[in-house]
Image (cartoon, rainbow over all chains, first blue to last red):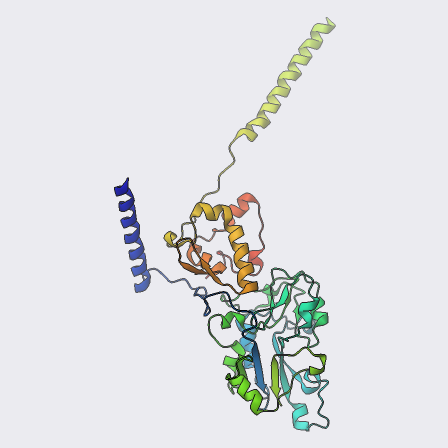
Length: 259
Length: 127
């Protein structure tokens, strides 16, 4: 009995070693999906310790450059229906009047008015969308990200009505038909759910910067922890005059703009 | 006589009924076809739990994984033997994708239609 178990153990160990060696030397093909690596944080995260934020330096943003939006939409399998009615957007550009309709500055220069500005989910500290959601499909995460749990979304679109920034899009059609260059590293969505920017929580978990921040050739986007006084974003916020979208609503956005 | 004729008719119908019923019962009595378990992982010693447990409880495991990883951010699963895994469908499919029918074989047999593959990559779609 004892010997039998011992024999089995030795056999299995030898097999495991062989497979391991095979994988290391490239004999056994490595799996080409996203590598499942353990996240950068090991334990259950502490709620409220981190608050992720983004600062967009619109002075550096070059007219006609779409690299951030393209990188974002590619990395997250965002469908492109080539049709305004079915449009799904996570990160997009809009003129001054649409991004800052209630800006307190009067008589801004023509140059500022003619530029286009990046818009995305503001990941508000006081998010109206999470309060409107009847199923808690959208919720405030431990790190300040307003996250979507697509498993729970019933497609009622209350969050879209509640969001004052138009950051949410509804999948009227099956999005899989309109993903022109799908990636295997991120799931798609299905027909009948709302989707939006996730502040690249899929990349943060691997210790990476958001796709838009990384893709920007001018380093116009700064991403960091708003609760950490020594972070780059906090230093830039202290050194510059910044703006938020519709601050009078009291949503406390985590996305800031240098105009 | 009339009564003898009737008895004959009854007997014949009874035999026919019995025969017909028996034919149908034969189909019922056959053992239903069992699904073929061809899903041998690349390295089966690495599974998070024994196959018998996974066969019966994978839905509870996946449900727990999805809730705790998406909502509370607890993305690390610690198995019985102490080894750690990322709570992700890719952890499963990473080993089992060598069988394209991994999920579908049993699901079609049991006629269950989970909605996982509306969004996630199924073993059939993996590269």
